Image (cartoon, rainbow, N blue to C red; front, side, top):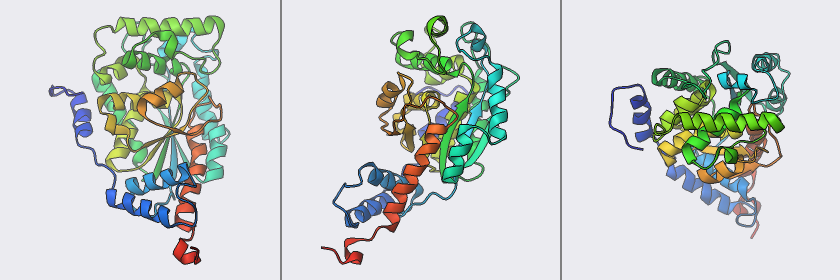
Amino acid sequence: MHRAATGLPFDDIRRLLADMPGPDLAARKAAEERQGQLVKPPGALGRLEEIAIFLAGWQGKPIPNVMRPTVAVFAATHGVAARGVSPYPPEVTKQMVDTFTNGKAAVNQICGVFGAGLRVFDLALDIPTPDIVERDALTEPECAATMAFGMEALAGEPDLLCLGEMGIGNTTVAAAIYHGLYGGTAGEWVGPGTGSTGDVLARKIAAVEAAVARCKGQLDDPLEVLRRLGGREVAAMAGAILAARMQRVPVVLDGYVVTAAAAVLHALNPASIDHCLAGHVSAEPAHARVLEKLGLAPILDLGMRLGEGSGAALSIGVIKAALACHSGMATFAEAGVG
């Protein structure tokens, strides 16, 4: 969406979105040619071939590799959680961050299997964002600063960045973002999240409906949707996705909440997430619908709804296998076949 410059912090974000590097087309073409020479029928490895070619283009190498995969988990707290929109209390967010730090969460185990580094970003856990039913989550300077903080996920120079999140109440926030971006009814975007049913689910739908209604007439700009209805982790992940694009680092998205960050950028410029893969489709009912809107086909479909980057981390195994086949298989000429 084009907007005149105002001198406000979001202008810096818009400038980045207007001048993004694309993939290396020569490296991509070379990877495609190599796939056609490997000892297999054309297209026989399906998505694995597509993934290898995708990585080649973004890494700028005909034979790409993943040596420094990083899972970045952004954790934040939300005022709307006090409305009882989750079966778990807000305190669980901080407890789970401690579990990540102690190496005892699911994502720690998955990272260990696939040799991925894990970085956890504490986004002012002691200070929840305001309840989005009553007030905007962030001011424009706060939102832009949080996006800038998210860009720090690239500081370790990963060659593959997997994004995850933690925050009780954040599937409510994500549903509000989707409702604000895409319209429809609140009920179409709200799912069980961490297990909301009955009265909890009803409160969740009501909160999303009320939050979006409060912002009526103010949501034509996706960045306004993000700051008014989002949370710190969503803003930070949007910043991380954008920073990765500027450095041509491929990104793997986790579930419903992470995809909300990508959806904001996509609404601003559909090409802004061309460097992103969907690690999996979660059990959250609206996640598949959002991925379809974004034109992303998930690598895995395991019925997961854990968050914390677990689905994205699991997809590292498939990505590494795709690259191993691309680099290690013999060509027909090398094998003397044909």
